[in-house]
Length: 223
Image (cartoon, rainbow, N blue to C red):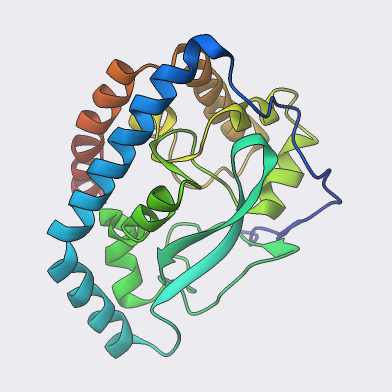
């Protein structure tokens, strides 16, 4: 099987085709959503502190390299930020060439494989939520190089930037996770993200948060 080719970053406008400020009618909902993000992410960080320490130690003992991995992603209104994850690979790709992870990827470390299957590598993104760069629920942010590749091929791709990116989202709980070897795979994910943007509510966010652990556990059993 031919190895996937890296996606190259094209020149990006400073802002995406989205509004800077939400309409007045949805500002109260966004305020409550932000309060929910702050409360839950802070509580999860405190509860998970022992687990975070164990994971950090395992990564340090398993392979050479930093414990945390930072990569540029694109967030609300097309603004770039650096996502924080536990390092799961021997490489630290960020920039013009980023190769998507695939099944049995030789770049993935032993501990990294376990972290990716269980989604525990995503826990440090709670810091991104606290900083306001992300939300607990929203479209998953992709590497900046991937954003540039797909926005040139998917007409409604930038629509997902109308809300903050999330640690989990409507696409993820509906099975649109992992690699997207074909443009059609990403189109399916973007369509689900666009549906979320149009129907976002606190009730929907709570539903997605409740479904996420079930999706992660079912994925673990399948692997």
